[in-house]
Image 1 (cartoon, helix red, strand yellow):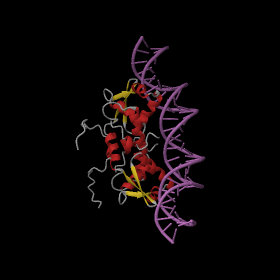
Image 2 (cartoon, helix red, strand yellow):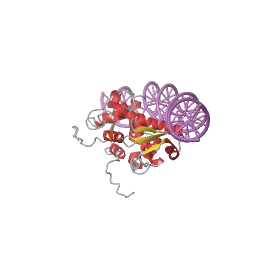
Image 3 (tube, chains in turn orange, purple, green, red):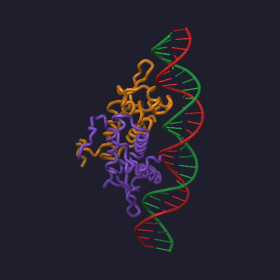
Length: 126
Length: 126
DNA sequence: TGCGGATATGCAGGCGAATCGATGGTGTAG
DNA sequence: CTACACCATCGATTCGCCTGCATATCCGCA
Protein backbone atom coordinates (compact mmCIF):
# COMPACT_ATOMS: atom_id res chain seq x y z
CA UNK A 1 0.00 0.00 0.00
CA UNK A 2 1.49 3.25 -1.03
CA UNK A 3 -0.74 5.25 1.21
CA UNK A 4 1.30 3.82 4.03
CA UNK A 5 4.67 5.09 3.09
CA UNK A 6 6.19 6.93 6.00
CA UNK A 7 2.72 7.28 7.34
CA UNK A 8 3.67 8.07 10.87
CA UNK A 9 6.73 10.09 10.12
CA UNK A 10 5.45 12.48 7.51
CA UNK A 11 1.82 12.17 6.65
CA UNK A 12 1.13 11.53 10.29
CA UNK A 13 -1.89 9.78 11.61
CA UNK A 14 -5.50 10.87 11.12
CA UNK A 15 -5.22 13.35 13.98
CA UNK A 16 -8.73 12.46 14.97
CA UNK A 17 -9.59 9.25 16.68
CA UNK A 18 -11.92 6.75 15.05
CA UNK A 19 -13.53 6.40 18.44
CA UNK A 20 -14.22 9.99 19.28
CA UNK A 21 -16.67 12.49 17.97
CA UNK A 22 -17.68 12.18 14.39
CA UNK A 23 -17.12 9.27 12.03
CA UNK A 24 -13.76 9.36 10.35
CA UNK A 25 -13.24 10.02 6.70
CA UNK A 26 -12.27 7.39 4.21
CA UNK A 27 -8.79 8.81 3.74
CA UNK A 28 -8.11 8.85 7.46
CA UNK A 29 -9.38 5.31 7.78
CA UNK A 30 -7.04 4.18 5.05
CA UNK A 31 -4.02 5.82 6.62
CA UNK A 32 -4.71 4.38 10.03
CA UNK A 33 -5.50 0.99 8.54
CA UNK A 34 -2.20 1.09 6.71
CA UNK A 35 -0.24 1.54 9.90
CA UNK A 36 -2.29 -1.04 11.74
CA UNK A 37 -1.75 -3.46 8.90
CA UNK A 38 1.96 -3.13 9.45
CA UNK A 39 1.39 -4.12 13.07
CA UNK A 40 -1.09 -6.88 12.39
CA UNK A 41 1.38 -9.64 11.67
CA UNK A 42 2.83 -12.12 14.14
CA UNK A 43 6.31 -11.94 12.69
CA UNK A 44 6.38 -8.16 12.82
CA UNK A 45 5.04 -8.02 16.35
CA UNK A 46 7.76 -10.39 17.42
CA UNK A 47 10.32 -8.30 15.57
CA UNK A 48 9.29 -5.20 17.47
CA UNK A 49 9.36 -7.14 20.69
CA UNK A 50 12.77 -8.61 19.99
CA UNK A 51 14.28 -5.27 19.07
CA UNK A 52 12.77 -3.54 22.05
CA UNK A 53 14.15 -6.13 24.44
CA UNK A 54 17.58 -6.25 22.84
CA UNK A 55 20.59 -5.06 24.86
CA UNK A 56 20.81 -1.53 23.54
CA UNK A 57 17.28 -1.41 22.24
CA UNK A 58 18.64 -2.17 18.84
CA UNK A 59 19.30 -5.26 16.77
CA UNK A 60 20.63 -6.22 13.38
CA UNK A 61 19.08 -8.60 10.90
CA UNK A 62 21.47 -11.40 11.68
CA UNK A 63 20.25 -11.46 15.27
CA UNK A 64 16.60 -11.66 14.28
CA UNK A 65 16.40 -14.45 11.74
CA UNK A 66 17.08 -17.28 14.17
CA UNK A 67 14.54 -16.35 16.88
CA UNK A 68 11.85 -15.90 14.27
CA UNK A 69 12.62 -18.98 12.27
CA UNK A 70 12.30 -17.04 9.06
CA UNK A 71 14.71 -16.60 6.20
CA UNK A 72 16.89 -13.53 6.00
CA UNK A 73 15.07 -12.03 3.00
CA UNK A 74 11.76 -12.46 4.76
CA UNK A 75 13.00 -10.75 7.90
CA UNK A 76 14.45 -7.97 5.83
CA UNK A 77 11.10 -7.61 4.13
CA UNK A 78 9.23 -7.28 7.41
CA UNK A 79 11.72 -4.77 8.73
CA UNK A 80 11.16 -2.75 5.59
CA UNK A 81 7.41 -2.75 6.16
CA UNK A 82 7.83 -1.61 9.74
CA UNK A 83 10.32 1.07 8.78
CA UNK A 84 8.11 2.45 6.03
CA UNK A 85 5.24 2.55 8.48
CA UNK A 86 7.34 4.77 10.70
CA UNK A 87 7.63 2.25 13.50
CA UNK A 88 11.32 1.46 13.11
CA UNK A 89 14.39 3.42 12.17
CA UNK A 90 17.41 2.01 10.46
CA UNK A 91 21.05 2.85 11.02
CA UNK A 92 23.80 1.23 9.02
CA UNK A 93 27.08 0.74 10.81
CA UNK A 94 29.64 -1.04 8.70
CA UNK A 95 28.11 -4.14 7.24
CA UNK A 96 25.40 -4.32 9.84
CA UNK A 97 22.04 -2.60 9.74
CA UNK A 98 20.75 -1.79 13.18
CA UNK A 99 17.06 -1.28 13.76
CA UNK A 100 15.47 0.41 16.73
CA UNK A 101 11.97 1.51 17.69
CA UNK A 102 10.78 5.00 16.89
CA UNK A 103 9.94 6.10 20.42
CA UNK A 104 6.65 7.90 19.97
CA UNK A 105 5.34 5.92 17.04
CA UNK A 106 3.43 3.12 18.67
CA UNK A 107 2.28 5.37 21.48
CA UNK A 108 0.64 7.59 18.90
CA UNK A 109 -1.35 4.66 17.60
CA UNK A 110 -2.32 3.68 21.11
CA UNK A 111 -3.56 7.20 21.76
CA UNK A 112 -5.84 7.03 18.76
CA UNK A 113 -7.34 3.86 20.14
CA UNK A 114 -7.78 5.32 23.62
CA UNK A 115 -10.45 7.96 23.11
CA UNK A 116 -12.83 7.46 26.05
CA UNK A 117 -10.23 9.24 28.14
CA UNK A 118 -10.84 12.85 28.99
CA UNK A 119 -8.78 13.95 26.06
CA UNK A 120 -9.23 17.69 25.82
CA UNK A 121 -11.52 17.95 22.86
CA UNK A 122 -12.40 21.29 24.32
CA UNK A 123 -14.45 22.39 21.38
CA UNK A 124 -18.06 22.63 22.58
CA UNK A 125 -19.46 20.38 19.92
CA UNK A 126 -22.72 20.25 21.75
CA UNK B 1 -7.93 -17.21 11.02
CA UNK B 2 -9.51 -19.35 13.57
CA UNK B 3 -7.08 -18.43 16.26
CA UNK B 4 -8.85 -15.14 16.36
CA UNK B 5 -12.26 -16.34 17.31
CA UNK B 6 -13.54 -14.47 20.28
CA UNK B 7 -10.00 -13.53 21.02
CA UNK B 8 -10.72 -10.61 23.25
CA UNK B 9 -13.79 -12.00 24.91
CA UNK B 10 -12.60 -15.40 25.97
CA UNK B 11 -9.03 -16.19 25.18
CA UNK B 12 -8.17 -12.64 26.06
CA UNK B 13 -5.14 -10.82 24.84
CA UNK B 14 -1.55 -11.89 25.41
CA UNK B 15 -1.51 -10.38 28.87
CA UNK B 16 2.03 -9.25 28.26
CA UNK B 17 2.85 -6.39 26.03
CA UNK B 18 4.99 -6.83 22.96
CA UNK B 19 6.79 -3.69 24.04
CA UNK B 20 7.66 -4.55 27.59
CA UNK B 21 10.13 -6.88 29.15
CA UNK B 22 10.91 -10.02 27.26
CA UNK B 23 10.08 -10.86 23.67
CA UNK B 24 6.63 -12.27 23.24
CA UNK B 25 5.91 -15.85 22.32
CA UNK B 26 4.71 -16.91 18.95
CA UNK B 27 1.25 -17.81 20.23
CA UNK B 28 0.80 -14.42 21.89
CA UNK B 29 1.97 -12.68 18.76
CA UNK B 30 -0.57 -14.57 16.70
CA UNK B 31 -3.44 -13.75 19.03
CA UNK B 32 -2.60 -10.07 19.14
CA UNK B 33 -2.01 -10.01 15.40
CA UNK B 34 -5.39 -11.59 14.90
CA UNK B 35 -7.17 -8.82 16.74
CA UNK B 36 -5.10 -6.13 15.09
CA UNK B 37 -5.87 -7.65 11.72
CA UNK B 38 -9.54 -7.17 12.45
CA UNK B 39 -8.81 -3.50 13.05
CA UNK B 40 -6.47 -3.02 10.11
CA UNK B 41 -9.09 -2.42 7.48
CA UNK B 42 -10.49 0.93 6.37
CA UNK B 43 -14.04 -0.32 6.11
CA UNK B 44 -13.97 -1.83 9.59
CA UNK B 45 -12.41 1.25 11.14
CA UNK B 46 -15.16 3.32 9.63
CA UNK B 47 -17.73 0.85 10.89
CA UNK B 48 -16.45 1.20 14.44
CA UNK B 49 -16.40 4.94 14.06
CA UNK B 50 -19.92 5.05 12.66
CA UNK B 51 -21.33 2.84 15.38
CA UNK B 52 -19.58 4.76 18.10
CA UNK B 53 -20.92 8.06 16.88
CA UNK B 54 -24.44 6.77 16.31
CA UNK B 55 -27.28 8.21 18.44
CA UNK B 56 -27.43 5.51 21.08
CA UNK B 57 -23.99 4.16 20.42
CA UNK B 58 -25.57 1.47 18.36
CA UNK B 59 -26.50 0.93 14.75
CA UNK B 60 -28.05 -1.69 12.53
CA UNK B 61 -26.74 -2.92 9.22
CA UNK B 62 -29.23 -0.95 7.20
CA UNK B 63 -27.78 2.29 8.61
CA UNK B 64 -24.24 1.36 7.73
CA UNK B 65 -24.32 0.28 4.13
CA UNK B 66 -24.96 3.70 2.67
CA UNK B 67 -22.22 5.65 4.48
CA UNK B 68 -19.66 3.01 3.59
CA UNK B 69 -20.70 2.58 0.01
CA UNK B 70 -20.48 -1.17 0.35
CA UNK B 71 -23.05 -3.84 -0.31
CA UNK B 72 -25.11 -5.24 2.52
CA UNK B 73 -23.43 -8.68 2.48
CA UNK B 74 -20.02 -7.06 2.61
CA UNK B 75 -20.97 -4.89 5.56
CA UNK B 76 -22.41 -7.90 7.31
CA UNK B 77 -19.18 -9.72 6.68
CA UNK B 78 -17.08 -6.97 8.24
CA UNK B 79 -19.38 -6.77 11.24
CA UNK B 80 -18.92 -10.47 11.69
CA UNK B 81 -15.15 -10.12 11.69
CA UNK B 82 -15.30 -7.37 14.29
CA UNK B 83 -17.73 -9.30 16.44
CA UNK B 84 -15.63 -12.46 16.38
CA UNK B 85 -12.62 -10.40 17.33
CA UNK B 86 -14.49 -9.27 20.42
CA UNK B 87 -14.70 -5.65 19.36
CA UNK B 88 -18.45 -5.53 18.71
CA UNK B 89 -21.46 -7.10 20.30
CA UNK B 90 -24.63 -7.96 18.47
CA UNK B 91 -28.17 -7.70 19.73
CA UNK B 92 -31.08 -8.72 17.61
CA UNK B 93 -34.28 -6.80 18.19
CA UNK B 94 -37.03 -7.91 15.89
CA UNK B 95 -35.79 -7.98 12.36
CA UNK B 96 -32.94 -5.64 13.01
CA UNK B 97 -29.51 -6.49 14.34
CA UNK B 98 -27.98 -3.76 16.45
CA UNK B 99 -24.25 -3.57 16.91
CA UNK B 100 -22.42 -1.66 19.60
CA UNK B 101 -18.84 -1.39 20.77
CA UNK B 102 -17.54 -3.64 23.50
CA UNK B 103 -16.45 -0.96 25.94
CA UNK B 104 -13.15 -2.28 27.20
CA UNK B 105 -12.08 -4.11 24.06
CA UNK B 106 -10.23 -1.46 22.13
CA UNK B 107 -8.85 0.07 25.29
CA UNK B 108 -7.25 -3.26 26.11
CA UNK B 109 -5.47 -3.23 22.80
CA UNK B 110 -4.36 0.33 23.34
CA UNK B 111 -2.94 -0.61 26.73
CA UNK B 112 -0.84 -3.34 25.17
CA UNK B 113 0.60 -0.80 22.79
CA UNK B 114 1.29 1.76 25.51
CA UNK B 115 4.02 0.14 27.54
CA UNK B 116 6.91 2.53 26.96
CA UNK B 117 5.53 4.18 30.05
CA UNK B 118 7.05 3.00 33.23
CA UNK B 119 3.83 1.23 34.05
CA UNK B 120 4.19 -0.41 37.42
CA UNK B 121 4.57 -4.06 36.70
CA UNK B 122 2.38 -4.52 39.71
CA UNK B 123 -1.28 -4.25 39.00
CA UNK B 124 -2.67 -1.31 40.83
CA UNK B 125 -5.77 -2.08 42.83
CA UNK B 126 -8.83 -0.37 41.54
C1' DT C 1 -50.60 -19.09 6.47
C1' DG C 2 -48.33 -16.35 3.26
C1' DC C 3 -45.73 -12.13 2.03
C1' DG C 4 -42.07 -8.80 2.43
C1' DG C 5 -38.13 -6.69 4.48
C1' DA C 6 -33.70 -7.17 7.19
C1' DT C 7 -29.52 -10.19 7.80
C1' DA C 8 -26.58 -13.90 7.24
C1' DT C 9 -24.19 -17.32 4.41
C1' DG C 10 -22.10 -19.67 0.04
C1' DC C 11 -19.57 -19.17 -3.85
C1' DA C 12 -16.22 -17.18 -6.87
C1' DG C 13 -13.16 -13.62 -8.98
C1' DG C 14 -9.39 -10.68 -8.32
C1' DC C 15 -5.79 -8.48 -5.84
C1' DG C 16 -2.43 -7.97 -2.33
C1' DA C 17 0.73 -10.26 0.98
C1' DA C 18 4.04 -13.69 2.99
C1' DT C 19 7.62 -16.56 2.02
C1' DC C 20 11.79 -18.39 -0.04
C1' DG C 21 15.79 -19.09 -3.29
C1' DA C 22 18.88 -16.69 -6.08
C1' DT C 23 21.26 -12.58 -7.06
C1' DG C 24 23.62 -8.15 -6.52
C1' DG C 25 25.87 -4.58 -3.69
C1' DT C 26 28.90 -3.21 -0.11
C1' DG C 27 32.04 -3.13 3.55
C1' DT C 28 35.71 -5.91 6.17
C1' DA C 29 39.39 -8.94 6.76
C1' DG C 30 43.34 -11.30 5.17
C1' DC D 1 43.35 -7.74 -4.69
C1' DT D 2 40.51 -11.47 -3.21
C1' DA D 3 37.45 -13.78 -0.37
C1' DC D 4 33.86 -13.50 2.82
C1' DA D 5 29.96 -11.88 5.67
C1' DC D 6 25.82 -8.99 5.96
C1' DC D 7 21.99 -7.11 3.88
C1' DA D 8 18.56 -5.53 0.24
C1' DT D 9 16.17 -6.54 -3.94
C1' DC D 10 14.08 -9.52 -7.66
C1' DG D 11 11.21 -13.16 -9.36
C1' DA D 12 8.01 -16.74 -8.49
C1' DT D 13 4.79 -19.28 -5.82
C1' DT D 14 1.32 -19.91 -2.55
C1' DC D 15 -2.15 -18.21 0.37
C1' DG D 16 -5.49 -15.27 2.44
C1' DC D 17 -8.71 -11.53 2.14
C1' DC D 18 -12.07 -8.05 0.23
C1' DT D 19 -15.92 -7.66 -2.51
C1' DG D 20 -20.27 -8.61 -4.84
C1' DC D 21 -24.03 -11.62 -6.60
C1' DA D 22 -27.15 -15.04 -5.56
C1' DT D 23 -29.46 -17.46 -2.09
C1' DA D 24 -30.99 -18.96 2.40
C1' DT D 25 -32.81 -17.73 7.03
C1' DC D 26 -35.41 -15.21 10.29
C1' DC D 27 -39.13 -12.28 11.94
C1' DG D 28 -43.18 -9.34 11.98
C1' DC D 29 -47.39 -8.36 9.87
C1' DA D 30 -51.71 -8.84 7.21
